[in-house]
Length: 307
Image 1 (cartoon, rainbow, N blue to C red):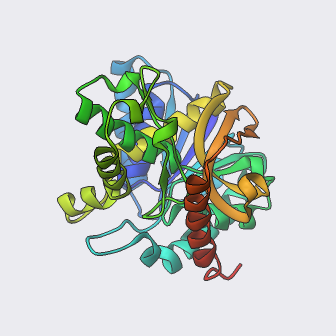
Image 2 (image 1 turned 30 degrees about the vertical axis):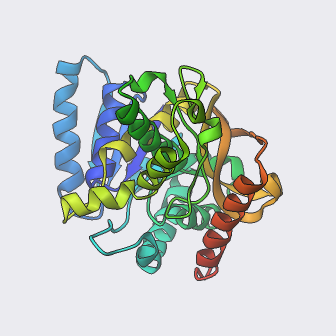
Image 3 (image 1 turned 60 degrees about the vertical axis):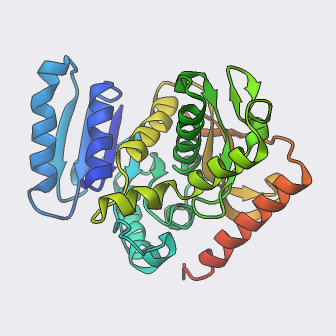
């Protein structure tokens, strides 16, 4: 496997490092426009492989020739959020960046699968999907995995239980309108509503929605990168190892969940062909309404993008 990570900032570099430590690729290419940054970080990671006992070749570059023939491309390029900045504030600039990146990636690796991490996530996935011309199973966004991980973390913290025993589902857009599903969230198989009262669950749901900006406010000059990187790698591993994992990902919908022509987070089966199935779970009226509202918000933002 050959994997390219576009963007050598905190998210991209951490993603490449985790990929290398898990030995998920024979070759990892780290791309960034800033001269020296991808080369230096790649060489530093490569120098760690003897210690980690992983035979992964890692190279850094400012161009795309070295990415030729990539099987999987993870796009993290773009401006990060700063305090007081919403994901939508990033729309115009990051649209330009993701469109340009996608064009160059497709030129070098026409058979690749794309995982988009850039914000605003759902719309940037739409930009990559439309720009690439790929089938929809080969373009997806990392959002639900991250949001679900945050929900699982907060549940674990509240109940003082291992995160390994907590499962959670978060659907919808990656933002304030995301749709955590307590009914489908469990602790060792026990439904969350059987363990916590509604007020407590509502608090955890809201903290999940605010999880990204909570970290931004702490850092002040940056945004989250450890959890986004780990979430991206979880998706990549499911594809590379053909694991058939059921994970919530941002995908282009064509009637699923009664939604059409929108990118939004729903559960999918991830394997060697990318999105191998969109899994349709039964939502109650309130959950469906929340998902519809979230999708409408994404569509409104998508309309601002001129593709």
